[in-house]
Length: 78
Image (cartoon, rainbow, N blue to C red; front, side, top):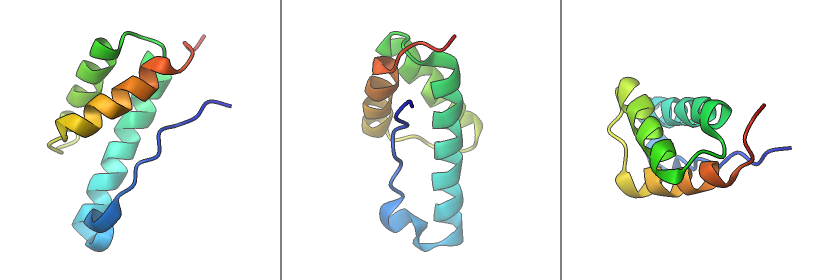
């Protein structure tokens, strides 16, 4: 089974707004895993950034880079 990068909402989830932000990020990560696993890290980072922005969240560049590394290391999906 593929390992999905874990999103830790941390203190951001202390408010209903923060929890919704964390859920939006997790949704975008899941979409990118399904569509771009095994792709080059730069392309994964670009797509992930676009998807997160499309959901109305300003992504943290450091977190996007880390998630892109993990997603790029996953095997390509059929």
